[in-house]
Length: 179
Image (cartoon, rainbow, N blue to C red; front, side, top):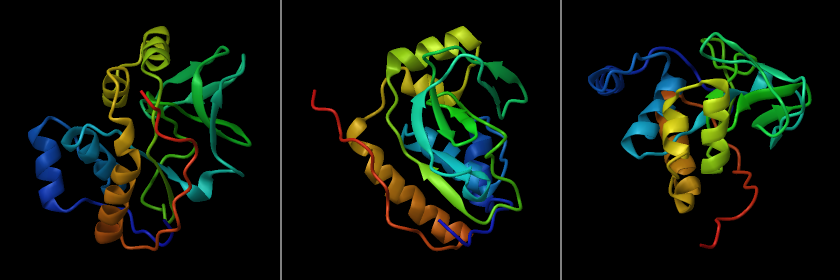
């Protein structure tokens, strides 16, 4: 989504997040937190201008690390699901985002991620790295896989309504699992 304006959230969004004990951060981040709680659908926004090359989900490689949004640096071994670009990990899939691609007030383009992460791998990553997050809590208990595209569309609409901008066509990798 290009041409967004990030900043303070509208009062109604701040009030809803504050009512459940969350500190409002910025409208882009607050929208993803709102969806995590309101619809049990964790989402993540990456500052698209800070991503180098293509972004994809993959397993971590020994020796990689992530400077996370909680202010800590995590050394990674093999087998952790990461969202990465050409420079390396940008987030721990289903657990926490990284500072390298985090949104700031200067953010004008975002990549909105609506994903499905393996509950067992997500729980194991969180336990191994001692990370408690709202996303981890939901993904390790399994989220509705059929709601990923709809949640992306709803969040895109809210971003456009509150931040402006122009959305691209969605890029969808994989299919909804057949249970």
